[in-house]
Image 1: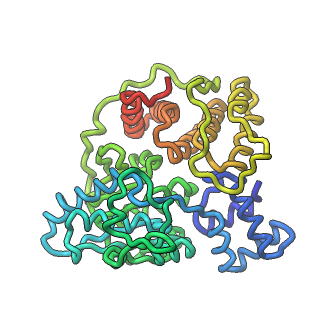
Image 2 (image 1 turned 180 degrees about the vertical axis):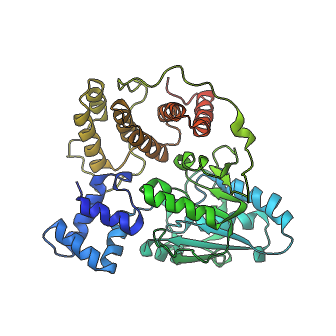
Image 3 (image 1 turned 90 degrees about the vertical axis):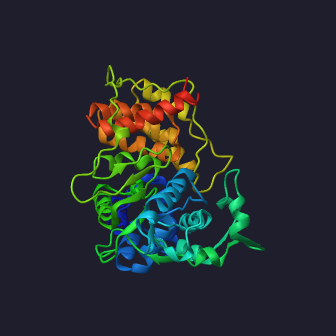
Length: 417
């Protein structure tokens, strides 16, 4: 387990919550940097990283593992196209549409924004994209603009022929797209970050909030409120929607876009989609931890670190059995060992959420369920449990969003049987 001092250093530097990717992953990254610096203890390494800005950045690079691809979650880009053409362009016969990608990682997201607008026919002189990330390494890859097959996922890759040239090193994004995206390094924990920026009409801030501790989360949401234009478009990650509903942002109700409208001056408009009443659950979740037999552990979607077939693999089924008989500590240990070998997985976070829920740690349970949804947006049991918790806390708007997603899965036959 990483030391408290290491965890505090990451929180202070980038608002990073160690639990968001698993303590084992952070410890592995820190040990690698400790060896690189030829230091004999973690305590000595933390002291060195505190004193050296370059080493702090190297630690951040080791911890932050980008996972992105072009046109990830296409409904968000459909929402961008509709907003630009049907609302913004009609209301602004002159001027430039300002867009922000934060964090931009290795560039797939802001380039996707540019391709979406170009394919929609928005005049080339009418939009500008700023893209920020804390990782200098990721930004260097984004500036290079050459991508391998891992960045192109899904069946519809027609955009690749329109906007990329194939090279011996991979697919290079064309200058006709690159010229719209302006990459810069920025840290959301820096108090002067975007302090003097003009407001943006569109902000993509996807899968950042899930990694932040509470103080950094509040700063990030305050930043989004400040930089997003009134009634502008904000797209977040699937597991981050409930964190915005209690603020002044207004959910658009667009399926799978995870999109909000920026608060206007004065009271925010009411979203009609969210006014549908949801019956309160007849009972709270049982304290007995039960995972449905149909919900079998799956391979993690975002594996990190080295894997060895010779190493015994922690069994989440065994962890479930232990939790079900009240041996919570042993169940948690297996989940952590599973994360150490395979990286975070939706099923492990789901089980951890059940354990926290059973022991009365509601805040920790909600955090784990949100992380599970980040890894698997269609995890029916997570949606069900998180919705019940939100209803029990009288957070009816968040519960409504989760219930809608739960119903859609059920109607398509993808819910747990």
